[in-house]
Length: 266
Image 1: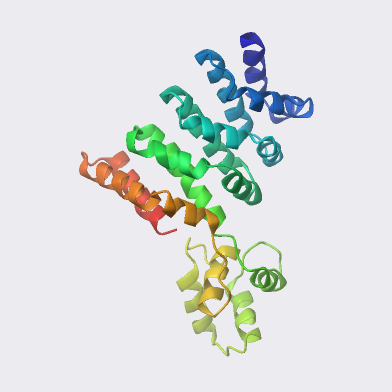
Image 2: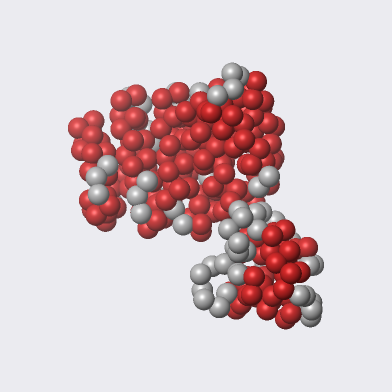
């Protein structure tokens, strides 16, 4: 078994087309079944390394990994895993939030306790692992923020004239006029600046959703944000920010503290 795991792990560390051969032959189901049943430390490490590499693959491969229940198994085992296991498990989850589509990231959060598992790692995490955990949590929260009312999504998509997934100032003006809000160009620009959270000069669906709520749209509960807060996320992030802010200030520690502050604003 160890040699087989090492071979699979080596294959999925290569190009996406080689990883796809493992996906196509049912290798992901086999790996997932070993997460909680492999007692040998080296073997568990190989399983997690393989899963982590797949999670860093294409969006389709991450979606296939999610369908096997791998993230549910990994997050469950993190409650009793060793530091080495949990480190690789955190990489697996974080890689998936980076490579997976928004819908897959949402499915991972809904179908497992990955958000909670990442939060539980923060208190004892070193600087490197803190960055990995914060990366994953930030992408989970951003995915959750895309949850909007179906009517809001319909309005957004119907006015996204060029289909680029964002509303320009002109497109936003058209939306507002369609809502019987007679706004001038400067007023539309001011609205855009207020809700343009990432400062790219346009409104994403999530940003437009925040505007819609202000205009009276029904609120859609963000399950990821709720689980983050119920799991003590805000308290954990503030503790990390305080820890790094109190350490000797250099570029790295300041960056972590600032990152925590941004995350709490999501």
